[in-house]
Length: 392
Image 1 (spheres, rainbow, N blue to C red):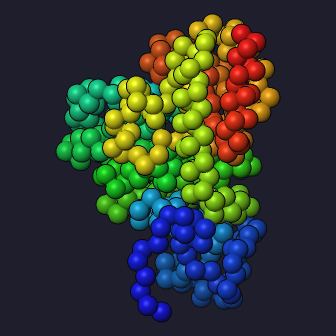
Image 2: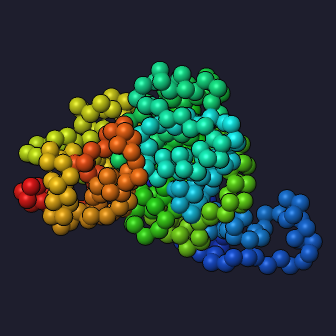
């Protein structure tokens, strides 16, 4: 066969990055906990690391291979590791790289579940957690001196703030700090952090990568500049693995990722512009808006602005609760990234355990709503917003 130019993302999503045995178009589900060996010598060869056979699904399963290969290719990474959830992936990365006395520099604007894990589990284990505002790079650089690792997200959850990924990567490299970014909101279609020098990328595969609100999962993807084995060992040892059936669903969802993200991007930008014209909407948070504080950075490092926006309603909690209750197309539900549009109130969901200061730092008010814009007809979404706002 003649050599072809590198495949584009939509093609990689549709066909995957790894050939399948037996000529199958759709990879099968290996729904098994254990694998048979033909002899004791085969087991001995596996134990010596001289075999590519599988032993036990906590250590590896063939169903993982195709989505892991596809995701590593999409992110321009060396290796990907599937997990039972984004939280399991985050925990495994921390356990793999941090020891008591190490200092982790983390963004002050983080998904509430991640912030809760850092403060309630890592900190009591002797890890020093230093959270700073990643919008201020001087704060970031000062904190990185002597630190072991750095964790942030961009855009942030739930108020979609944009962090300058290349600038943070350069600072981490300068100070010898291992870096990781939660790329869930952007997806590898809109943003590739490894290309700008970040060491690790994490996704909640529950969200856009799967795209259908029917599985829980996570993934860690290593750059070509780091050793992936500590994470491989942490996954085996801690055991937060993805079930084979969930891996199959993820692989199926990835086939349409590029198409879905294109629609999410266009719908979210259109709805953000529309909401900005409505009475009672005090603020719209979306990096695609020219007036958004992160717009210039987003234009430099992203190819699309994503499918999530946040709004602040002038009437506070009472207004935003009435608004959410009146919606008929946009579902009042947690999570994001599915084909269906969802609305959630961070004060009741992602930031329910956060202090008032932590909410203020994240930009969360009593009247904040996060909207994950789906792939429905945009005119229907605008009409739904109109009739719900009329109730306030």
